Length: 603
Image 1: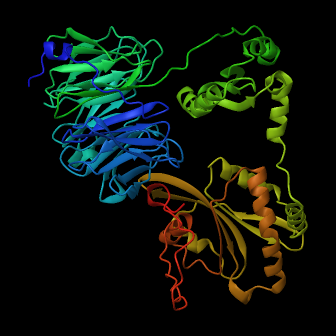
Image 2 (image 1 turned 90 degrees about the vertical axis):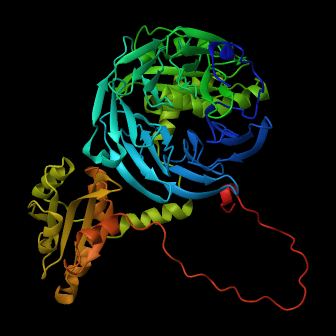
Image 3 (image 1 turned 60 degrees about the vertical axis):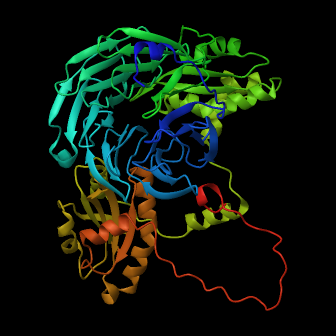
């Protein structure tokens, strides 16, 4: 059946599913169109049978959370998905037995784009760490890395040979998968005449058009070969700047997007005219929209909205305004969220106090709903803007004096048990503390500022001080020659290396003691002063020592040795324990059976 204007206008809601209690993050159809899968902020992965029109199974990712999710190429029983709780690792999951097949670590910030190759086991991911990584399902190692100088959204073309990256919400860069390391072979600027962020990038199935989604109430279709603007589509509601997903129909003739009022808007890519507005019967904004690649169906998903109840303009400083602005906003019988702006700023802008208000008199259902949406609100608002977080059930908890008490409590040390206090006293009294000479102090300050990369220190036993020996520029291959063969030394070295495709720096502390050629007194003094020196370096100079090691000579200080010390292997082969045979005879049925936990992990 051909997709036409009339066919699209005839679409009606056929099925409504309420499997999720929180925002649905993503929906994806299997390549054969017979299955669909969704992910949501309540950590659920729901599988749907499209032919029967009903949910088939629900899996959970309580530990890691689930954000973007995609079926793998040619397989309806496996998916890859990004996490939104524990870390930013991408996970490869088998749907048949609910077990992880492989992990893909590397990204250091939230994954905002995930695209599976239409022809093989390759997939790409874009992240807020400003990188695009290329992966192969058969290996956990990143197969390639590009740094397009921005926060990239990305997508494969229909032939799986080219991928596009949208950079800094102003340019599209095209990469050849076979020569991505040479940089983009084409780049097109495509600036919008309004302030907005690009939230998605998709190729049409014929490969001739690219669809740019934004959070600014406008989407754009450009020519995939030269970047010229073919159409700008607007006229749908998105006043709150929500990330709304748009998509092509399988024949590339139409573009669809949901709106803030729960309706779906459709335009023709040939004429540029709006051809349909469909009532999705959604109570909130349609943030996810996907057309089935094989059948005449499409899926849309929404989320309930948090709405602005009231606000106050600042009049004086934040502390003078606090009680006057905040306390009148507290409803006596209903929960609410309050964001209070401070006068201090960080690299992302003004800092805020996040207050979760939940009075004892409010209904249990309301308390549960607010507790479930708390993490989502913080993520959408931006965790980097939130300086402090408070929870209150009575006015005294969240008033200005309550905030000061909260700050005092957070800054005070955690209480210690009697055993911990005893251990702390032992650590305080043990060891010697020779003072650092002024030259040594200046050298450590220069090391912190990355002006030097190596420091060698020695103990002056007569004066009972720690003195600087030298700060010669040192490469990794020079390090073995810096280790004296006849006297002990302390060394601080910045080890520059590449790990998982990214350049990293690790501060290594080396305590060199050349065997028994040194006197017993020297060995005891160097051993006793070492811990106090490290405590002083980390406390007073804010230098984080990644690895501490003791050596008797510099012969083994190779780059491979340092890399293995700084990045030890996570999994080591452990010898299996041979369980002895039990007593003979019948033992009866087991009283307790320990089951498997989530995704095949032991509970």
